[in-house]
Amino acid sequence: MSKPLEGIKIIDFTHVQAGPACTQLLAWFGADVIKVERPGSGDVTRTQLRDIPDVDALYFTMLNSNKKSLTLDTKKPEGKEVLEKLIKESDVMVENFGPGALDRMGFPWQYIKELNPKMILASVKGFSDGHHYDDLKVYENVAQCAGGAASTTGFWDGPPTISAAALGDSNTGMHLAIGILTALIGRDKTGKGQKVAVSMQDSVLNLCRVKLRDQQRLDRLGYLEEYPQYPHGEFSDVVPRGGNAGGGGQPGWVLKCKGWETDPNSYIYFTIQGHAWAPICRAIGKPEWIEDANYNTATARQPHIFDIFKTIEEWLADKTKFEAVDILRKFDIPCAPVLTMKELANDPSLRESGTITEVPHKERGSYLTVGSPIKFSDMKPEITASPLLGEHTDEVLKRLGYSSAQIANLHKQQAV
Ligand code: CAO
Image 1 (tube, rainbow, N blue to C red):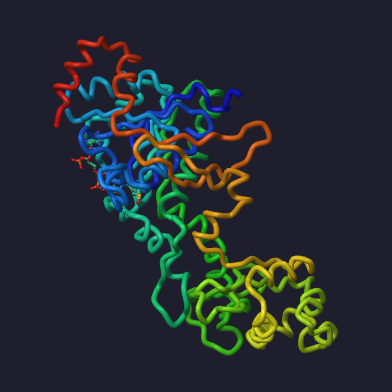
Image 2 (image 1 turned 120 degrees about the horizontal axis):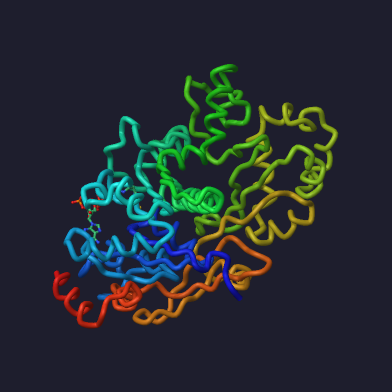
């Protein structure tokens, strides 16, 4: 089956996570993605947090599937020449170097555009161009702090907290992928390429949209009724950390289940959806609360919401998280067990759908990775292994018209 992005040629000049996550997604959907890496070392994640000596680390393999690897020292003249040829024949170039690195290398946007007016240059930086921090190098957690996630995550009596979800890295890569696809559609109409830039700060903030909503509500009202601080605690003039409170109009909390004393993940997330109050009362054996004026509206419940959660926890005390969810699902209550990475890795439904997938690799044997979270009716992306360093160098050079003798010479000149 042909894939929608087949024929789209992408120069993947990315490293670490934000850029590679973007190009990996496009490769799954059929794009021809050539990862350009420094000879000898390649993407730093090849060697970071290795679990097997001398074999590409999972950090690399899980972010670079379905790609080709071309080693090229783009600071040497012969490397620059190859990159120029690639730019002329490609559709997209993706990069996430530190600020100014591409310019210093001799490939500013102006020049790339001259080489190929149809080229789409897609860049990730920590901060957007012109921002007063636009000279900073940025990693995941830095972006979470700069984008508003850290100040609003965690508990009010603890420090700002980082999420394990890659809000700064992979999330920015996903934004960039949307930008690239938009620019490709735009190019079909205008015949012209353009530069697409996404900053990690902006991408985190985009996901913290509801917290900016809350800041404006707080400015106006002085309180936020769905936060645990209401009505008994204090609010300052900034959005506080709300622990595990629900971010929308539905109160919710992480509740203990049977075994929580020894299993740190024996919890469910329980949501009190306003219109589901009667089923909730029936599910937890409190039918008398259905019509009780102290309980039968969201406003009436809010002052003693934590007593309500405590009662639900008492009901949960003799049920595992899985048993609890099996009961609550019959009452249509939005809830889920708190799942561990081990449980997710072995989840038969995720294996079946391809969201967790096992990939054979030339040197590792096989490894687990997260497959495409996007499902199509007419296409199932097949996840193939990440490339070894320089695995496709000769193949790509041949495609660019280099002879065997020229390739051998290039190898000599590029040797580290
Ligand atoms: N051949 C020759 N040189 C190469 C090369 C190649 N194939 N590939 C990269 N380089 C050079 C670059 O030209 C640059 O050199 P100069 O600094 O001398 O101009 C250098 O390698 C890379 O620099 P860098 O600033 O990108 O790398 P770093 O390790 O110092 O910083 C990071 C890493 C991620 C902090 C920085 O790249 C960054 O801020 N990127 C933008 C934000 C981002 O994407 N962060 C997310 C990373 S995922 O957590």
